[in-house]
Amino acid sequence: MLGNTLILIVSMSIIQNISFKGNRIYMTTDEGASYSLPLEAFPVLMQASPTQRKGWVIGKFGDDVRWPELDEDIHISSFFEEKEPDYSNEVAEMFAKYPELNVSQIAASIGINKSLLAKYIYGIKHPSPERVEEIRQALHDLGTRLLSA
Image 1: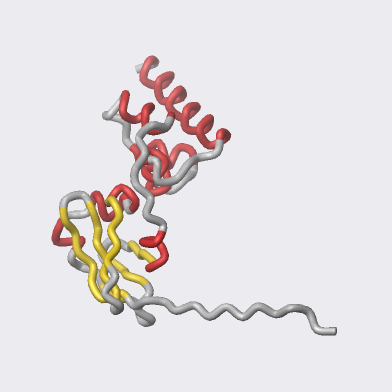
Image 2 (image 1 turned 45 degrees about the horizontal axis):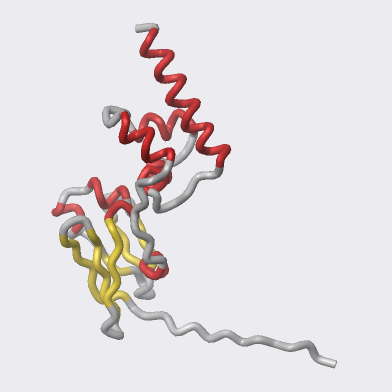
């Protein structure tokens, strides 16, 4: 007796264009579909200059975009998530309270990528309770060092 076999055929669109307007990135496909996400979802692009943002190239298979100068890659599937920023989270509140905090340095102090920490801050990704505690501890450690100055 043969078991049930499921064959899944995925029809993937091909990226045709990338553009930016305001604080959003837009992608259009060969099928005429258009998708948009906030730049907060891509912290490297958010911090890039308009000239740097224009330096994109579509990958060999048409399903990804690369910014060689920025060392940033985005797969077409990222646009299907449709996540909007949610600033009502503990990590966002910590960084909003102290805007002088350096995201890169805090991320490095806990051993994570700056882009990941930025996604936590913007509410695009949600850290585990253990990760929130790591971030909180890094801020406490920074405060202790500042008090000793």
